[in-house]
Image (cartoon, rainbow, N blue to C red; front, side, top):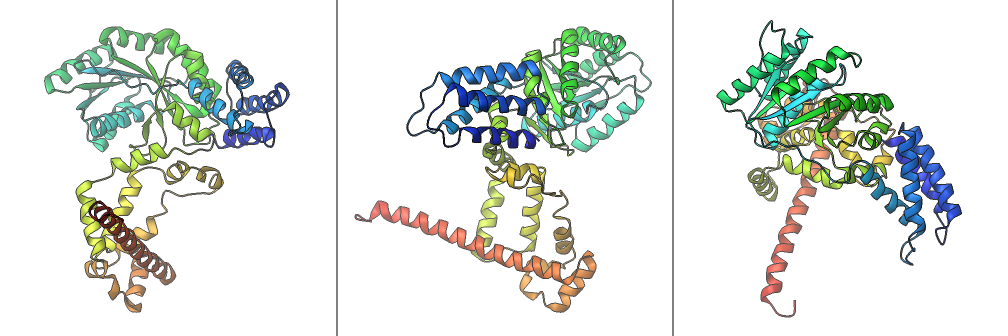
Length: 446
């Protein structure tokens, strides 16, 4: 996401490269290019103009310190204004009700029902909640079955009334069921249409009035650009929702919706969908998104994802095995599974500063580990535990069993040996540093 915008902005800032100071002329030239970049990214015209006017005013009003170049100052001002444009601060959900009721709204095709499942998974696994999903889309029978399947997939129960025709009554009954079963969050899936119409709006308004939700989240497809912003405005005029969930930000989207929606409807973006997997839903952080747009990466989000998969006891066990040179293919396989749980590989790589631009044209397949997993799973338990026994005949058998070739098997074993040596060196160095720290405290002069 935002690759084209990032590239265009980078080119715009080069206008100031080599300039000794900021002037009205070079700022105007730079911001003219910035405005074009925003419009090409499908940002609302009024939003783009207001944005560049604000940046110009701030840039001309600042004295450039001798330690800071005009280009660097402009990048900082644009970064801060981008973050402000997208909301400034991260906005959390209001979950104070008993149960807290979340009403989901949106058009068909935006991923609303799928988003219900993703949100339930996030609340259950990361917030420690006990959510219940309610199927109140009586217009589309397949939506009930879809929600049932998603509920099973994420381990969250679903309240369904087969053959029901009154979504308001279903929603009311779902609240009573949630209270009776001790659920602290109720997520209500509602009907969508191919376009905004009176029947759709009236139905959602009736549900809203009946259940008095703590949160009304509007789900919108970011790939529809300015259409997404226009639809968001129509829904907000009728529903006065509390927040937005942008879906498909991992697709070929120019990012205009993410940059425009807050200014147009004055409602925060609370979550973004970044992939098809059920865990691909992230809280929206305006400042971090501004970092990514300007090619600075998002190392904080990367660390947070890693911490979610981090098991302290497992880490200690792994460290002991590495120090004893016992790290084997079973451990290697477990590490691959943890990386896969962190999300889309290209998205993860893009969070590393400087890497996003380098990989923008690369096709990083989420199935990149498939052959490696097949090779490891084709080994016997003894071979996984004792890699040193992998002679030529064993390697040929593994290649046939995994549907790969002997070259791929040899390459993996070589990479595994290198990884094991490197991990041993890292842990040994860490231990030596800890020992040196202790000795320094006890021996004067060290």
